[in-house]
Image (tube, rainbow, N blue to C red; front, side, top):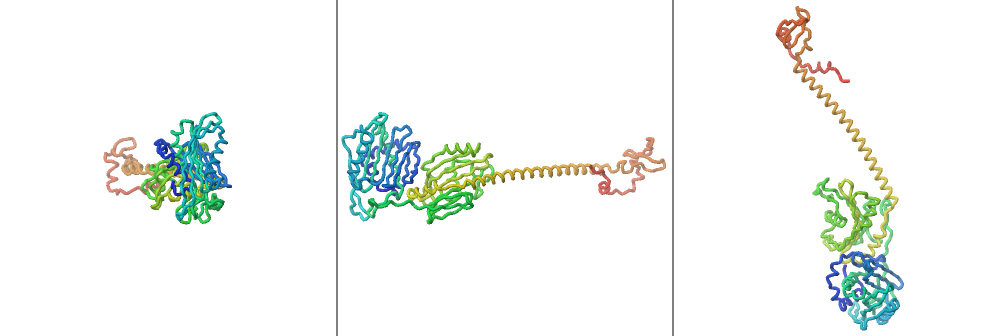
Length: 508
């Protein structure tokens, strides 16, 4: 995150680390740890901490002061920071004495090291004129906690400009040197939200002046009663329907996005068709980058931290997705938007279908230019936290969707039945037509059979004819001329199809 968005407190911390503890912070072990982002629930700071470490924080408004601790899961190692308005004003030595007295009060058996280190940093106003000095003191010691375990600590106190900074790292006795690089790296990852404190024109803290107020947010409602959220009064809004919305500042550079994207499996669609997201099921972080690059919203996505939300996956599988594939992640990343470096944070949810024909991505996203992101985090986090869906409307949508589904199934069944009946009738008609064709073909090849010239009249009375000749009723052959050539010789053949069609037996 951009250090320019930090206050003078972070400058003091940075000077202290460089002056006293810098060599330890370069240890390679700190770089091998998996880090994750933590956003203060009071919107006062963000910090990158080792994955799985526990953060506890507190905040008060009068006087404005906040504190947090980062502790490993076993409770062995801890980093603590206290920021706020100095109770001793610009008296740095008085602040140091107060911190030491508080340490002795918390641990009566505290033993301080014989020596401490001290440094004074000159301060200047915006015009370069001297504006006092900041005093930084570093001391260390050991104490026994309530369980009787010996703990070693190192504490930095900075004051003199109206603010106080008190940072402490600690570990079991004898282990602090080894743990220091990781603990110091954690404290170095601290970023204070812009506007937490007020400074005078000279760049120093204005003692007694009211602190800058958080950006005022006003309620916004989504179309058709889908839900609501809060945003600055001058922000623009694009309502995409169905609880989807894009909100942006007047310059259209900072965004809050709640939206959904549908993907089609390559098994069912040609991936080269434009404006269609075609891909197999993937994780939310990859799906968002794929969709943005495909639709031209961003490119060059680089992930700073990706956190799989197994807790949300379990909830989804218990009540919503069943056997469908699903994945939930929150992730911090950088990318390029309209040729400018951007940073974003998203909570993404991917849900597939039972037939593996596609999946959908629902995401809650905040974007801002990289050099402004840290300053916008408190406001964007409040906006994102305020977003809510109208549960009644969502339930009505689910009911309506189920009704459409079952109506579609009924319509499909009726169509299948109707088509089956039509196919049966057409098959029967084809069968009957084939029979008629076969009958007529056979009739044309044997149209001279006895059925056409049955029982010819002659001087012998009635005779019977067949291809071998004419016969008397008692079976004596009269002639070997088939059917009596004398009878058929001068006859003209005609097409008897019409006669056949009018006289043939009809199927019942």
